[in-house]
Image 1 (tube, rainbow, N blue to C red):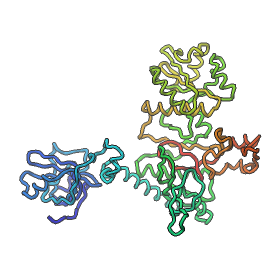
Image 2: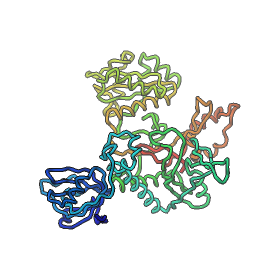
Image 3: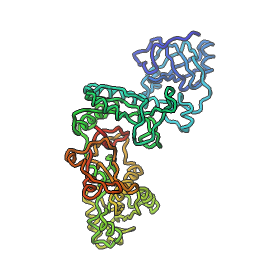
Image 4: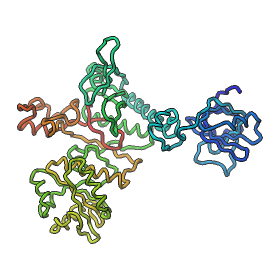
Length: 513
């Protein structure tokens, strides 16, 4: 039978189309036989349409129908009819109709499937990648590809509307110092020499600004030979933006507008016109990280005011050494077992905490268990003080404490515990978005391992204006690190904040504007 080109897609037909003769092309998603009548769910990119082959169908049509299996690619010619009222499927866009087949042509056959093409599959990743063309047929993967397309289009639409040029920069480049190893490509014309794949188009976009293009963007392909992590793989795409003659607020406002437009167009989600801004030091102090998840509260608190009257010598020594003691109140979790608390402590130790103390607030509002014996003289002050914020330190709550002579260790380790609790307690609503800018990053941090000062994020970030006059005036001692008052000044410096693409609902780290 000769192939017939489709006249509609599998997502087009509605009740208004009843009586029309149509041709559908697609894949067999499901097939069910009921007493001589066959029901075929035919799928393409646009949706699913139910096709019916009646028991009195011609012998040739019945023979072809009997042969069909999942993922056979077919062409169907038939007449649209309304489904019986009791069989209308409100969960399908085409659920009010079905197509009664008059002819059916197999365009290609499919071997037995290694896994079922469903919304969710339990197939192993290696299997899915081996049969990538099957994996990409699933509704979940189709939705992801569609979302990526819509996001890329929305970015282009918004930035072009703001006067930006989209300019592609070379992929084969000369190797330049960067944060990871380069992927190298041998040159045929110049034996023994290699091209490098770009880790970022940094130098090219700066060249474009010097050349007077003023505003540029591209959806840049970047390559980094490093271990994969949660928000990065060896080959990735970043929204790359460069502007001339601007200040920090220009960058922040542009990106707030871009993200608002992007979310509105792709997810129908309205973001606030301006995002929350949190100073770096404040973010570390409250959340223990420069990328805090703001979808839940449970902020860390300063526990120093309650150590002077207590008998916990370890905490007193921490404060005497210039460190910090941080507290985290976990609402309603006084019933946590010792094993559960030890799991949280193990998370803190990953970030170099030497340990984690804990106490519970009992039904009478008194402290009990763990380190509570050291706070017998000021237990009421502890509960009242940590309960100054709504929802904190009530009967039935768990109090977690980490102290360290290095303030950043105390904050980072307890912040990691907070993040773990957010996941464990189901506090991270995937449909909720809370964006924030983390501003005033330090330009440099001292590396204990290297014994020298290092850039806190990357060297393309511009110091804030108040530091321009002194940015070149630091001196170095014989070890090549910043010394004396210059060292302390450099430690306090803060860089400009700007946009960096990040797949989460938290604050992006700053990068060059």
